[in-house]
Image (cartoon, rainbow, N blue to C red; front, top):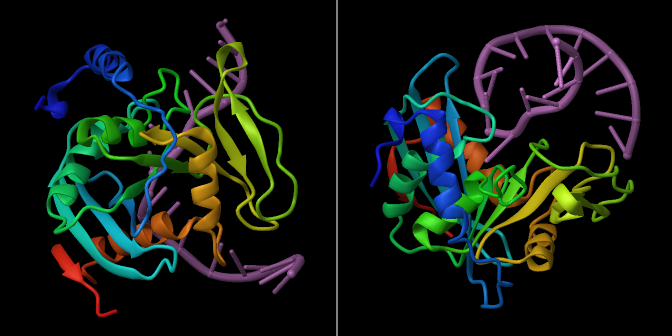
Length: 231
DNA sequence: GCGACAG
DNA sequence: ATCTTGTCGC
Protein backbone atom coordinates (compact mmCIF):
# COMPACT_ATOMS: atom_id res chain seq x y z
CA UNK A 1 0.00 0.00 0.00
CA UNK A 2 1.29 3.43 -0.97
CA UNK A 3 2.07 5.88 1.83
CA UNK A 4 -0.34 8.72 1.17
CA UNK A 5 1.40 11.00 3.67
CA UNK A 6 4.41 11.56 1.43
CA UNK A 7 2.63 12.14 -1.88
CA UNK A 8 2.63 15.35 -3.87
CA UNK A 9 -0.59 16.55 -5.48
CA UNK A 10 0.62 15.56 -8.98
CA UNK A 11 1.38 12.05 -7.71
CA UNK A 12 -2.04 11.87 -6.03
CA UNK A 13 -3.65 12.95 -9.30
CA UNK A 14 -1.89 10.11 -11.11
CA UNK A 15 -3.19 7.63 -8.55
CA UNK A 16 -6.74 8.93 -8.99
CA UNK A 17 -6.50 8.50 -12.73
CA UNK A 18 -5.26 4.94 -12.25
CA UNK A 19 -8.03 4.02 -9.81
CA UNK A 20 -10.63 5.67 -12.01
CA UNK A 21 -10.79 2.89 -14.56
CA UNK A 22 -11.26 0.31 -11.81
CA UNK A 23 -14.53 1.87 -10.72
CA UNK A 24 -17.63 -0.27 -11.23
CA UNK A 25 -20.96 1.53 -11.48
CA UNK A 26 -23.40 -1.32 -11.96
CA UNK A 27 -26.61 -1.04 -9.90
CA UNK A 28 -26.57 -2.58 -6.45
CA UNK A 29 -29.18 -5.36 -6.35
CA UNK A 30 -28.30 -7.57 -3.42
CA UNK A 31 -30.39 -7.61 -0.26
CA UNK A 32 -29.32 -5.26 2.52
CA UNK A 33 -29.23 -6.47 6.09
CA UNK A 34 -26.64 -4.00 7.33
CA UNK A 35 -25.61 -0.59 6.09
CA UNK A 36 -22.61 1.39 7.28
CA UNK A 37 -21.84 5.08 7.72
CA UNK A 38 -18.29 6.48 7.65
CA UNK A 39 -16.91 9.83 8.79
CA UNK A 40 -13.85 11.60 10.19
CA UNK A 41 -13.43 14.22 12.92
CA UNK A 42 -10.38 16.18 14.05
CA UNK A 43 -9.23 19.19 16.01
CA UNK A 44 -8.37 22.23 13.94
CA UNK A 45 -4.60 22.51 13.25
CA UNK A 46 -4.01 18.98 14.55
CA UNK A 47 -2.53 16.04 12.58
CA UNK A 48 -4.60 13.53 14.54
CA UNK A 49 -7.79 12.31 12.89
CA UNK A 50 -10.59 10.31 14.50
CA UNK A 51 -12.20 7.93 12.04
CA UNK A 52 -15.30 5.87 12.52
CA UNK A 53 -17.69 3.47 10.81
CA UNK A 54 -21.11 2.85 12.31
CA UNK A 55 -23.10 -0.27 11.41
CA UNK A 56 -26.89 -0.06 11.27
CA UNK A 57 -29.56 -2.69 10.75
CA UNK A 58 -31.50 -2.15 7.56
CA UNK A 59 -34.17 -1.03 7.01
CA UNK A 60 -34.78 -0.28 10.70
CA UNK A 61 -31.62 1.89 10.77
CA UNK A 62 -31.01 0.87 14.38
CA UNK A 63 -27.26 1.13 15.12
CA UNK A 64 -25.67 -2.14 16.22
CA UNK A 65 -22.07 -1.07 16.73
CA UNK A 66 -19.18 1.15 15.71
CA UNK A 67 -15.49 0.92 14.90
CA UNK A 68 -13.41 3.89 16.03
CA UNK A 69 -9.76 4.56 15.22
CA UNK A 70 -7.30 7.40 15.91
CA UNK A 71 -4.50 8.02 13.42
CA UNK A 72 -1.84 10.57 12.46
CA UNK A 73 -2.09 12.13 8.99
CA UNK A 74 0.16 14.57 7.17
CA UNK A 75 -1.44 14.89 3.77
CA UNK A 76 -3.13 18.35 3.84
CA UNK A 77 -6.72 19.02 2.97
CA UNK A 78 -6.82 19.96 -0.71
CA UNK A 79 -10.21 20.16 -2.45
CA UNK A 80 -10.41 17.16 -4.77
CA UNK A 81 -7.95 15.11 -2.73
CA UNK A 82 -9.85 14.46 0.46
CA UNK A 83 -9.37 10.72 0.15
CA UNK A 84 -5.60 10.98 0.59
CA UNK A 85 -6.22 12.52 3.98
CA UNK A 86 -9.09 10.40 5.28
CA UNK A 87 -8.96 7.00 3.57
CA UNK A 88 -5.99 5.56 5.51
CA UNK A 89 -7.78 6.01 8.85
CA UNK A 90 -11.05 4.72 7.41
CA UNK A 91 -9.30 1.60 6.14
CA UNK A 92 -8.11 0.90 9.70
CA UNK A 93 -11.65 1.32 11.01
CA UNK A 94 -12.91 -0.93 8.20
CA UNK A 95 -10.46 -3.74 8.93
CA UNK A 96 -11.44 -3.60 12.57
CA UNK A 97 -15.09 -4.43 11.78
CA UNK A 98 -16.05 -7.97 12.88
CA UNK A 99 -18.49 -8.18 9.94
CA UNK A 100 -18.67 -5.87 6.93
CA UNK A 101 -21.92 -4.04 6.03
CA UNK A 102 -23.57 -4.85 2.69
CA UNK A 103 -23.15 -1.26 1.59
CA UNK A 104 -21.34 1.79 3.00
CA UNK A 105 -22.30 5.48 2.92
CA UNK A 106 -19.26 7.76 3.06
CA UNK A 107 -19.39 11.41 4.12
CA UNK A 108 -18.15 13.09 0.92
CA UNK A 109 -18.65 12.62 -2.82
CA UNK A 110 -18.51 9.51 -4.98
CA UNK A 111 -18.11 10.14 -8.71
CA UNK A 112 -19.27 13.76 -8.37
CA UNK A 113 -15.62 14.79 -8.63
CA UNK A 114 -13.39 16.38 -11.31
CA UNK A 115 -11.83 12.98 -12.08
CA UNK A 116 -14.78 10.96 -10.75
CA UNK A 117 -12.68 9.85 -7.80
CA UNK A 118 -14.28 11.28 -4.69
CA UNK A 119 -13.57 9.64 -1.33
CA UNK A 120 -16.53 7.23 -1.54
CA UNK A 121 -15.34 5.93 -4.90
CA UNK A 122 -11.71 5.84 -3.82
CA UNK A 123 -12.51 3.85 -0.68
CA UNK A 124 -14.87 1.56 -2.57
CA UNK A 125 -12.32 0.66 -5.23
CA UNK A 126 -9.59 -0.02 -2.64
CA UNK A 127 -11.82 -2.31 -0.60
CA UNK A 128 -13.93 -3.55 -3.52
CA UNK A 129 -17.01 -2.77 -1.47
CA UNK A 130 -20.30 -1.13 -2.57
CA UNK A 131 -20.22 2.55 -1.52
CA UNK A 132 -22.29 5.71 -1.92
CA UNK A 133 -21.11 9.29 -1.46
CA UNK A 134 -23.28 11.68 0.59
CA UNK A 135 -21.91 15.22 0.87
CA UNK A 136 -23.17 18.41 2.46
CA UNK A 137 -21.67 20.73 -0.17
CA UNK A 138 -20.92 20.60 -3.88
CA UNK A 139 -17.38 19.98 -5.04
CA UNK A 140 -17.94 19.75 -8.77
CA UNK A 141 -20.78 20.03 -11.26
CA UNK A 142 -23.84 22.08 -12.10
CA UNK A 143 -27.37 21.82 -10.70
CA UNK A 144 -30.69 23.54 -10.20
CA UNK A 145 -32.18 23.93 -6.73
CA UNK A 146 -34.47 20.96 -5.95
CA UNK A 147 -38.11 21.39 -4.87
CA UNK A 148 -39.05 22.17 -1.23
CA UNK A 149 -40.35 18.79 -0.15
CA UNK A 150 -38.37 15.94 1.38
CA UNK A 151 -37.44 13.61 -1.46
CA UNK A 152 -37.36 16.27 -4.17
CA UNK A 153 -34.18 16.12 -6.22
CA UNK A 154 -32.43 17.47 -9.31
CA UNK A 155 -29.53 16.10 -11.38
CA UNK A 156 -25.90 17.10 -10.77
CA UNK A 157 -24.11 17.21 -14.09
CA UNK A 158 -20.53 17.51 -15.24
CA UNK A 159 -18.73 18.01 -18.53
CA UNK A 160 -20.81 17.28 -21.60
CA UNK A 161 -23.82 17.19 -19.31
CA UNK A 162 -22.74 13.86 -17.87
CA UNK A 163 -24.87 12.77 -14.92
CA UNK A 164 -22.68 12.63 -11.79
CA UNK A 165 -25.24 12.39 -9.02
CA UNK A 166 -28.25 14.14 -7.53
CA UNK A 167 -28.99 17.10 -5.29
CA UNK A 168 -31.52 15.88 -2.73
CA UNK A 169 -33.83 17.79 -0.44
CA UNK A 170 -33.45 15.55 2.58
CA UNK A 171 -35.70 17.68 4.79
CA UNK A 172 -37.90 20.78 4.30
CA UNK A 173 -36.31 24.19 4.83
CA UNK A 174 -32.71 22.99 4.87
CA UNK A 175 -29.90 22.99 2.33
CA UNK A 176 -29.94 19.90 0.09
CA UNK A 177 -27.39 17.07 0.27
CA UNK A 178 -25.37 15.73 -2.67
CA UNK A 179 -25.67 12.03 -3.48
CA UNK A 180 -23.49 10.16 -5.97
CA UNK A 181 -22.53 6.53 -6.65
CA UNK A 182 -19.24 5.45 -5.14
CA UNK A 183 -18.32 1.95 -6.31
CA UNK A 184 -20.48 -1.04 -7.27
CA UNK A 185 -23.61 1.12 -6.98
CA UNK A 186 -25.59 2.93 -9.68
CA UNK A 187 -27.19 6.33 -10.08
CA UNK A 188 -30.80 5.42 -9.29
CA UNK A 189 -30.22 2.81 -6.62
CA UNK A 190 -27.79 5.00 -4.70
CA UNK A 191 -30.27 7.88 -4.65
CA UNK A 192 -33.16 5.64 -3.59
CA UNK A 193 -31.12 4.03 -0.86
CA UNK A 194 -30.17 7.40 0.61
CA UNK A 195 -33.80 8.47 0.49
CA UNK A 196 -34.69 5.31 2.41
CA UNK A 197 -32.17 6.36 5.08
CA UNK A 198 -33.79 9.76 5.75
CA UNK A 199 -35.58 10.29 9.05
CA UNK A 200 -35.96 13.49 11.09
CA UNK A 201 -32.63 15.08 10.19
CA UNK A 202 -30.93 16.71 7.23
CA UNK A 203 -28.29 13.97 6.94
CA UNK A 204 -29.13 10.35 6.18
CA UNK A 205 -28.89 8.17 9.32
CA UNK A 206 -25.66 6.32 8.42
CA UNK A 207 -23.51 9.45 8.08
CA UNK A 208 -25.39 11.34 10.78
CA UNK A 209 -24.70 8.63 13.35
CA UNK A 210 -21.11 8.21 12.13
CA UNK A 211 -20.59 11.94 12.56
CA UNK A 212 -21.98 11.82 16.10
CA UNK A 213 -19.78 8.86 16.98
CA UNK A 214 -16.46 10.22 15.73
CA UNK A 215 -17.19 13.55 17.38
CA UNK A 216 -17.84 11.91 20.75
CA UNK A 217 -14.77 9.75 20.21
CA UNK A 218 -12.64 12.85 19.60
CA UNK A 219 -13.98 14.40 22.80
CA UNK A 220 -13.12 11.30 24.79
CA UNK A 221 -16.73 10.27 25.25
CA UNK A 222 -16.34 6.98 23.39
CA UNK A 223 -13.50 4.40 23.45
CA UNK A 224 -11.29 3.42 20.52
CA UNK A 225 -11.85 -0.01 18.95
CA UNK A 226 -14.98 -1.97 18.09
CA UNK A 227 -18.03 -1.60 20.33
CA UNK A 228 -21.15 -3.70 19.89
CA UNK A 229 -24.39 -2.06 20.98
CA UNK A 230 -27.08 -3.85 22.96
CA UNK A 231 -29.94 -4.14 20.51
C1' DG B 1 -6.76 36.75 -14.44
C1' DC B 2 -11.25 35.38 -11.82
C1' DG B 3 -14.24 32.36 -9.37
C1' DA B 4 -14.85 27.72 -7.10
C1' DC B 5 -13.25 25.00 -3.69
C1' DA B 6 -16.05 17.56 -0.33
C1' DG B 7 -13.84 17.49 4.88
C1' DA C 1 -13.59 20.24 9.44
C1' DT C 2 -13.77 23.19 14.10
C1' DC C 3 -14.97 27.39 16.95
C1' DT C 4 -19.16 29.69 18.84
C1' DT C 5 -24.36 33.05 20.86
C1' DG C 6 -28.21 34.14 19.87
C1' DT C 7 -32.16 33.68 17.02
C1' DC C 8 -35.76 32.18 13.80
C1' DG C 9 -39.07 28.57 12.43
C1' DC C 10 -41.45 24.13 12.59
